[in-house]
Length: 389
Image (tube, rainbow, N blue to C red; front, side, top):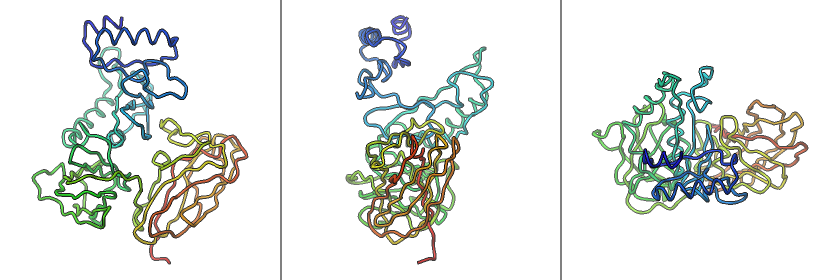
């Protein structure tokens, strides 16, 4: 049947799933036959059951990562995530959990920023028609892509760190800024921009005068932007650059403004004894946090001394998850305790501290894990406090 599909329809991609339902030798036989039938055929990384501790796409051309992701982890090489419009892969008349178009626009930008692709899943009704709720999502994506598509298609992963306002993508000598949170003061700081910016413009207004760019130092630039975004979900700014950008994983933290979210998927380093969820809704978290010598870390920098209110968003898997931890911000430490919240995400205040200026590492370290898991942590939140010493 696979050979018949290749012969009759000449597909460019063959997407395999559930390899664990067949013996590895049968999967290999199928894969070999497909490659011999069409050598140029692109085959995903689920063609053969993953070998323990082996590369994700050993027998495929790219890695197939999480199904129904809410957030995306970084992956090396070529990869793809597989979202659904609701929580079902085919049409399901009782599944009314459709996500808003904004979710997919931003997920698309995040995937492109990390060098990946999205495979959107929808399913027709029994009579072949597409659910109007799915149509509305696809039409919204179409409309957004008609204006901003060049910032997604043909791009590669960004050399810039995650920004407080959103994501970025790259295409040759252009950087595209995907601004989810538009700056209220009209000043957009782009951290890690070591190359010279020769032109900046709004993709939605290509004939408008270019935006004014000024350098704030060797690593950052500031762009003067209009008071309102060109798009409610993701307004894109194009930059033409001259020269190379040194890849930078150090997150810039402003001393004032909106709360800053440090998601666990964007951490700089994860120690032994701690893992990640697959990114699905409610599972974009740490998991299996059992070793007291493990830690989460983010590498950050500040231009000036800043005071933050620090909180942690997490859930627990059991009522016995009553451990303790400390948050280390450079030379400052805050002690926290896990209060069980089985299956429900909560945001717990940990304390207040002042840090900076300069570069430092922020880490979350267990001090006691009496249960099976410290917590299912989603993010660390730093809320700037102004007008205080």
